[in-house]
Length: 425
Image (cartoon, rainbow, N blue to C red; front, side, top):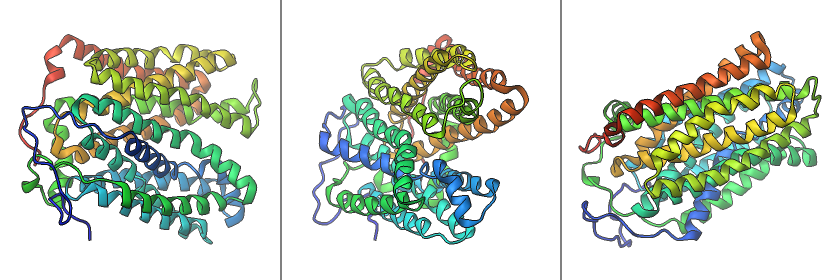
């Protein structure tokens, strides 16, 4: 049984901190590394399918369009679970919830590895996507364990693991599939998640008591309060818009990029195209750097710079339709901007309501992911109607949205500190 967020038998918890005194407790590096690896493995499961779709199609006798639905239903499962599962982290002990979600994902990966029909494939894909939200619960858990002076750095480090999972999932899946077929990546991932579940169950510590833990809402109230947090917290709303603009621009680039690179003047193979994802590793470095800057009170500066880069990156990306150097520079700048802005956003929202960090995560990430879906849809339409030029203009529009919000915030400095002080419902 999952324990609620209250003192557990056999576990000693520190007394509640004085609300007026900043928390200074440090979280161990080993635990931060464990959470980073765990979040990376959880979210990577959503991306294994992308280089395997043609093999899956051939093996299960599906059309190309039907096979492509595997990615869509996996993402849909993730988006729904952001709203329905992540808020549970504010109701129960996350040290129990994270291993439980990890175990469930391990089982779903095994079911996917044994899929013999499209129906089984899609059902398992939905489950894999939904249970990937353990990554977001893990980020909120790390933020709760960290002291105020190090929270941005810790969140940045854990997010680095998550980003590594996203970036390396496709490469690892393709390599494992070359060794043993498309089912092999899922068998291996399922086994790894079983081991990770055991390690997490043993190693994750108890959290400090959360503010107002004795009046924690029931599940239905917690889910409903996600929307109310967006309504009541102007900082959360603006950070959600930044996130949606950033991930929207990111999706505008990566959705049609393989079509650009496989056609003239490039004509690259699938393997070479996959290497472009490794350029995103620069974003991992940005994640930790943005977190440290937020800890030093420079969140506003990072936000303005990141929003500007999000827009400016589409100048070299636009030239990338014909020039490889422009494409490489643009990818590096865009990914740097996206990840720096994302980490700064999370550092800011986690300072709002300590007792509601999982619900803050749900509200932010649901908006963030919605921006990505809109970016993918817009990129498909732009590429079919206007080619790479249309894609570049569409991506620049997302950057312009981020710059506009940053400019408004700059002109209204009081808004950066605006928040409600009452506890979350």
